[in-house]
Image (cartoon, rainbow, N blue to C red):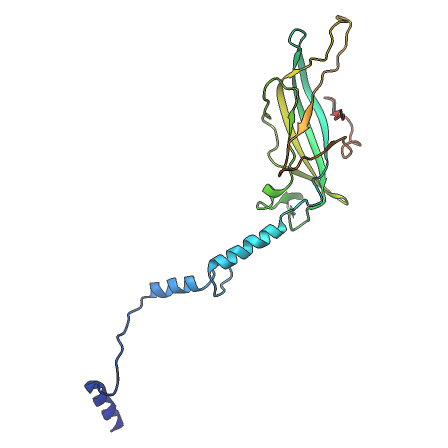
Length: 232
């Protein structure tokens, strides 16, 4: 009897209210689930929160160099000298620069890792652009001189040391250079010391210091000749 009464009340519409039903599709349920949960950690918050946290932690890993930039050791390797012009006081040269420095702010598994198959050390791709990488330019070049092919675009890891990570970069230059202070009064019995002058460029608004090579001091000189950087 009660079931019949309930059915009669539904038919009459006097005791129960029927709300309009909304049809939902499986696609709408999937879209709602995607917007409700973060696709990075599956937590119930917008994806931008996790993205901002990820960017924050990435910034915490970046080397800051608050104690200053590392000193850069410079080693000259002269590849060719020719065309000494006594009238225009210039000469042609090709040389490479080996820049070495110790970076104590870099830590294993935070800024770099080891490939155990090749037994080599590599920077994490997101960290590499933020690592100190010095650059130099020739001062006595005739005109503006840019590095030529063979110049490293980023530092290479040489080895780990107790004082920090040993990094290196090679730069190559080729062109004409001025030698206005060279005298040819004793020709043809004269000898000359041709100048190759360089200066560092600013990195992140700060100027690194150049110094005599120490890391490569114990290495034997190659037949081509390694010419050490001399202050002044």
